[in-house]
Figure 1 (cartoon, rainbow, N blue to C red):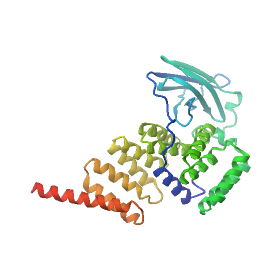
Figure 2: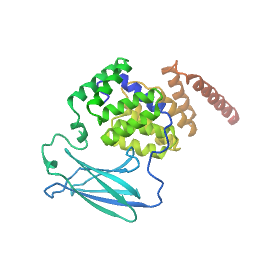
Figure 3: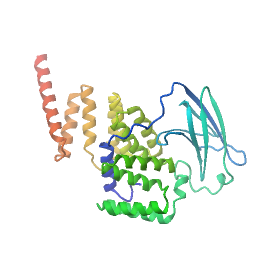
Figure 4: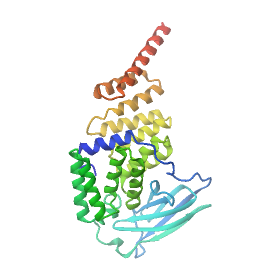
Length: 336
């Protein structure tokens, strides 16, 4: 999704991920007391096993967060620790997608899904490379979406929004267009509208990784870090090369108090990013301070100040550096 628009969308998205506004707290699975182990057997129309099919479980009250499994060579997927409740199960295999309701409660469940006749037809891709939903998008909508990307890359946000509206008029379930429109809304502080777009994007295409990253950012802003991790894991399983996803994952882990794991994720984000993104240094510094790794924290704070001298957070970063310097100096004196 980011390829055509280049750095413009990259910075817009990463800014949204860092500054995501608080959303209504209706996201995530219910706090149920019992959990289920689910086994799903997927068969083709001729009765053969369907290997590498993706099985998504979506809470009926929300599609933004899902549990996912993949079938083995025998066409069997196992998903453990599923909270009891009502779900929509979506099975994706090559060009086929099957949806069915699943009421899961008490004990283990075994479900069988038979794919339609065209499941073994022309193999234009797999469930992990090209989504079924992407094949349904009319070319006219794709052209408008690409114009929106180009307009955004040139800083023409109103023009980008106009092209997105045209794309969605042609095909209302265009997940990429819904996601990009939601990102623009988030950047404009319209969190309610953005949330609706992200939900709609994932309902339309459960493979839309960017929507999961944006939802993860929202959970981070709500300090609902476990839910953020779940959503971000889903996004990273779809797009393991997204540095923005690792950045948000690092924030979630730091929020959970898993500081070293958060640092590791930030380092991965930093190594994968094609451009410098100074806020990475801030998150790493926060984690290092919590771990009492003061020299490392000072290095990260200095890197942030050097790379983003006009950022409004520089004043706070400098104040923190002064405090750490004073603490380190006092500690040295006390040890002498």
